Image (cartoon, rainbow, N blue to C red):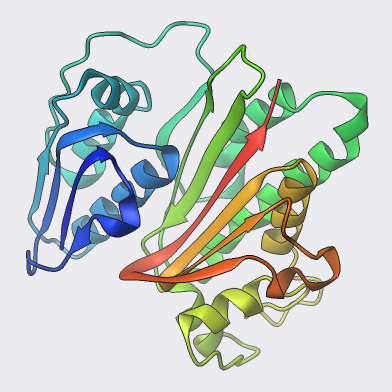
Length: 280
């Protein structure tokens, strides 16, 4: 697989199948990228490392992209997970006041504590205190879902973008390189039978629907999405060859599983959940 882009990286338009049985990540012409794209690339690196495929990374020449990737620890991640040295030319180092959850792997919900701390701090205010509490608690189950359903460790990263401005927002993403939603449902104890990755996302967004037989499961993703949208945020779920984007202005709280805009995208292993949340 080859990931190649220019300008502002649109990850799902940058995937090509020219490179077989190896991963090539060519970001040399990329000027900007976001947390969704960075975590998606990290998931591709994790998958290739799990499959012992060769990995080749070309760093961006543009200072903005290089600084962003460095501040989120991409160079250390690529070295530790992919065994590849990624020499990022950094012109501005991260400042002590930057609010960042660096790119990292996790194998349990407890390791998402830095992300929960960031949300607790930046989403303060009496009006949203209940929403904030529900969102932070839902992340625990979402983290558990990654390790229980996917068969893979998870990857997380987050940062506050445009801090100290009216349009400041937390950008976060949680992903994995595992079996994906559809296969998880097909192999699960409850034996759901989604016919496609799109249908699997619909099932995953249905309250109390889970591949596990435990009663009460199936709340993590739906609660996370609902609370994020209640904060006037935007959420993207990607699994296999399907992507669903849901915005606060176009969703039905009673029919979350039918909300949002669906798109077909190049197939990737695993699942990725990303959100943008307005913050102080």
